Amino acid sequence: MKLLFKKKYLFLYNLFFLSFIFFHFQVKAELPNDIKHIISRGKLIVAVNSVDYPPFFYHNKDNKLEGYDIDIAHDIANQLGISVEFNQSANTFKGVVTLVENDKADLAISAISGTLS
Image (tube, rainbow, N blue to C red; front, side, top):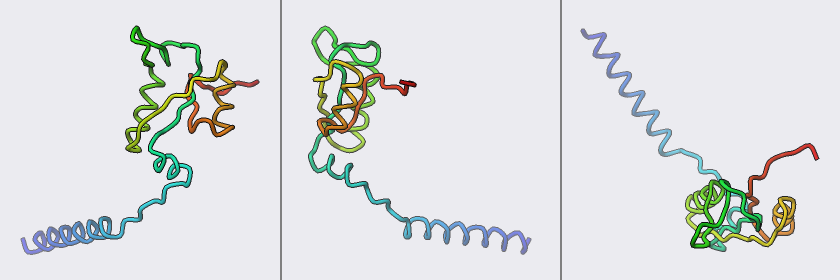
């Protein structure tokens, strides 16, 4: 009985010690500069192709953007605590990527996928 009590005590002590170490000495990761810039601006600018491509992105009957990609963009902005703005000036999928390359958008989202070409 005495040995069982010591094991429980030792287990609780170790659990408390590890919890203390974890919560008090936890290292917080520094955000990359581009993410800091987006957060300080207060909005995430997302490049989307101007031509609808359901179910990824499309205009509903109220001319509001909807779709899987739009939901992902909103989720990212919500996690950062900022709003989202969509840049639909590109007429091609390559043009969507070019908007990001030319700093006209922070993120390209338009059913983008890697291709051999």
